[in-house]
Length: 67
Length: 310
Image (cartoon, rainbow over all chains, first blue to last red; front, top):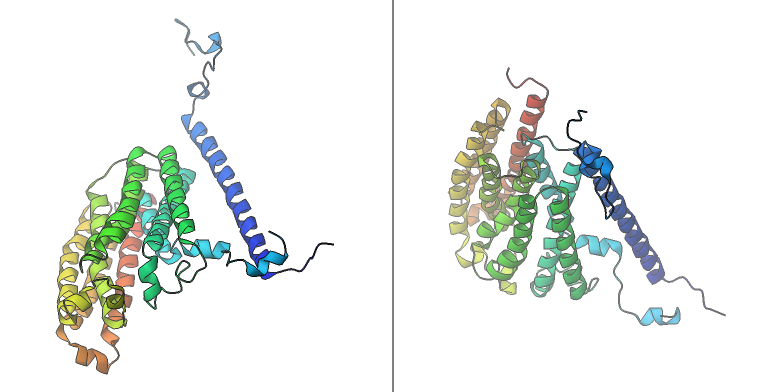
C-alpha cells in the first residue's frame, strides 16, 4: 500500500504546477487574442485571405469591375 | 521520486520564489513609466496591443532582474540586504535563474516584435543586454559610477513605450529617458548615505566608500542641478503643458532644496538626527519621478478630452 502522507513539498509542487498551468493557459489566450486583434485591424478580409496552395479565382482582382 | 524520498530532497522552489527573481518592485516602476510613454505618444494604440507591449516590457525587465540575480549570487550572499534573495538563500538554483532569465528575455523580445514593431523590440533587447551585461557583469564591480551609467537600463521603458505607439524615437522620448537617467544618481546616492551598506565587504565599489561621503554629497547636488533643465525642458515639447510645467517647477524646487541641504551638512550632523534629511530627500525623489510622469499623463488626458486648447 502506498504511503500517502501529505508533505509540505507536495503542497509546494501543487502550487507550482498550478502556476505553470495558469501561465500556459494565459500564454495561449494572449496569442489567440493578439491574433484576433491583428486580423481585425487589417479591416479588409481579403488582406489575409490568400491562395494557400490552391488558386482561388474569386480573390483575383477583375479588370473593369467596380466594387 | 517516491513519497519516502521527499524528506531527503533539496528545497524545491515555489512559484513565489521564481516570481521574486523578477524583482517585482522594480517592475512596478517600469510598468508605470512604460505605460506613460505609451499613453502620451501622439499615435493611438489598440488597447490590447498596448497591454501586450507593456506586458513585454515588464517581463523583459523581470528577465534582466533574474539574469542580474544569477550573475550577482556570490555578492548577494555576502550583503545583508540581498542575502535573502532566492539564489543566495538556496530556494532557487543558479541554473534555474539563468534559464528563466534567458527564456523570458526571448519571450518578451519576440512577442514585442510580433505585436508591435522592430524598433520597440530592439530597444527592449538592448535594455536587457545593458542591464545584464553592461551593468551587472561589467560596470557594477568596476567603477563607483556604476549607478550613473547603469541607470540607463531603468530609463529605457518610457522610450520603449513611446516606440510601441509611434515606431520611432523623438525628442520627447529622449527627454523622458534623460529624466530617469539623470534622476537615478541623486535618488540612489541619497539612499546610499543613510543605509548602512556592506558593498565594501562584497567588493562592489560604491561612491560613498571609494570617494567618501562628502564627495557623494557633492555629487547629489550636482546631478540634482543637471536634472532641472531636463525635467523642465520636457514641458516645452509636444507632450508637456501648463500642468506639467507647474508640477515640474514645484517638484524641482522641493528636490533641489533637499539636495542642497544634503550638500551643506556633514556626517556628524546627519548622525545627530539619524539622517532625517537624507531619508526625506530619498522619499521626495520617489514623489519627484511619479509626479513628473503623472503630470505627463494628466496632460495627455487633458489633450484627449479636448481641453488642450484652453
